[in-house]
Image 1: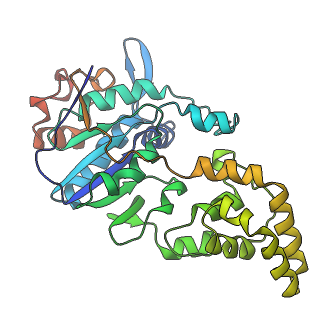
Image 2 (image 1 turned 180 degrees about the vertical axis):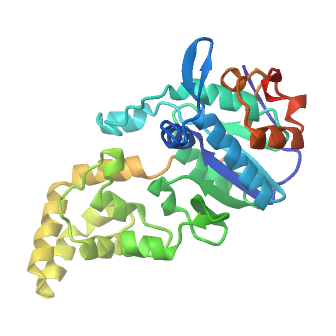
Length: 317
């Protein structure tokens, strides 16, 4: 069961964690020796890597941040995006049961004082992360994920995105990264990504091998596909006047494949939900961690008084 959990204070910093991504990352990082973290629970071998990974991440944030809250962003089925493209995110089958890990992590962490989870039907985790600046207008927003969709709101001033730790320091997406990948500084226009496509989400470019410099030029001039199509003829004419014949041909192909451009754009832009609820679970049991014997976890759990909130048996003691 879940219930709404009210904020006791206005946080200086809000950490938004894409929970499904952490589960995937932890599972694969600890699936094989020498980092294998499999344990036998009720006669079944279980990879406890995802739970270990999220605990370690929480510890890292606690060490390096003050005046913060942590929000675990949870995916739900997005029928709207799937209706636009039935192959959206196809081929992402996971060897682990994400929901089992997700339930355990939420049950462990959300009862703690400064940890919440967010889940809204029809919204993906990155939608909730990208709504955080409006949900918490007076807070610094730190998003923790490798999802490039989030770069459309990252400004490096109030809204940041990290992809992990290196030598004890969080590594942040910055203009150097986006200039190398997209040829543009932060934030990355949704229109640009819609034109070039995103293979990780199985969203092809409307026009294969579309010139990046032309894509950047169009994205700078037009923020949406509709804005582009309204001026499409003048765009082609201008390119021809500049003697950019090849670019004009690609612009014509983009016009001819406008529907795919619109689909990409609608899927890539985030859904507005600027007052998503902060929640907690009232199921205070963590099935998959009752066999753990990691000293670092034991120390962290005791330091945060988690024993007052979580029903874990004595194997950690």
